[in-house]
Amino acid sequence: MVDKIKSGITGFDQLINDGFVKNSVTAVYGSPGAGKSIFCTEFLREGLIEGEKVFYISMEQDIDSFLKQADSLGFTEFKENLNSNFMFTRMSGHDFKNFLSIELPKILESRKGKHSRIVIDPLTPFLWEIKDISLQRSMLTDTFNKIREFGTSIITIERYGDISRLELSEELAIPLYLSDSVIMMSMIYNQNFYQKAISVIKMRFSSHSAGMHPFEISNKGIQIFQDQPVF
Ligand SMILES: Nc1ncnc2c1ncn2[C@@H]1O[C@H](COP(=O)(O)OP(=O)(O)OP(=O)(O)O)[C@@H](O)[C@H]1O
Ligand SMILES: [Mg+2]
Image 1 (tube, helix red, strand yellow):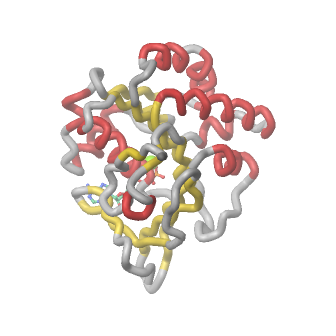
Image 2: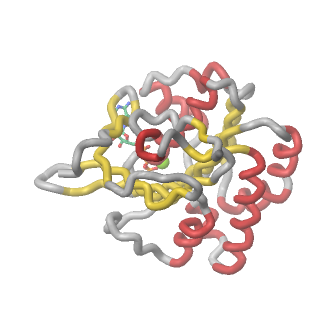
């Protein structure tokens, strides 16, 4: 039996046969403003509700901006658990390399045997930093193996262009192969309107929907409409 954990995103667990596979790494690819960071935030919030330790590693925003976004969605758990069950770190792609060799092993040691959730949002600066594809592949293989020990993780990758196709530049493509699950968050333009849509491209060890599902972000967060078509 494969252990599953709740994603925390309204309507998403029904698409992935009851939740994320425990101790897996999921890559979320998406266009600007598609909802990647909110997806991750809701995933971590679920962990806080369950009493888990959650880690948000940002290569973009600072803690004030993160809390402002959480506040706008009515998520009080992050402020309440800041520096206890909720750890926030901001770093550059270059710092992330050092983090992997120095900080991460320490964190892993301190969390041995306990389930945690970790988010790296976005991983893109690191992928740009390590342009040598074979080095990037071996560093990510190693990192993903380490964080699988740690718990369940989501990493995000920014991309733009025709999101309904899987074509990616070489330096952004490696996580497609190395992660256990791949999710695409798209913005589809149709008749003067941007429709947000989500698809599960792969999910190792689990059945999942093969469709593209519309979703909305309201002031309560993401809501996925599993049964509605995109246009
Ligand atoms: N409080 C809110 N109420 C309603 N919609 C919101 C709220 N906060 C954010 N949004 C919606 O979510 C979008 C931003 O989502 P998010 O930051 O998760 O996107 P992203 O994919 O991480 O973007 P980026 O590429 O900029 O990092 C906004 O553009 C807006 O459409
Ligand atoms: Mg974001």
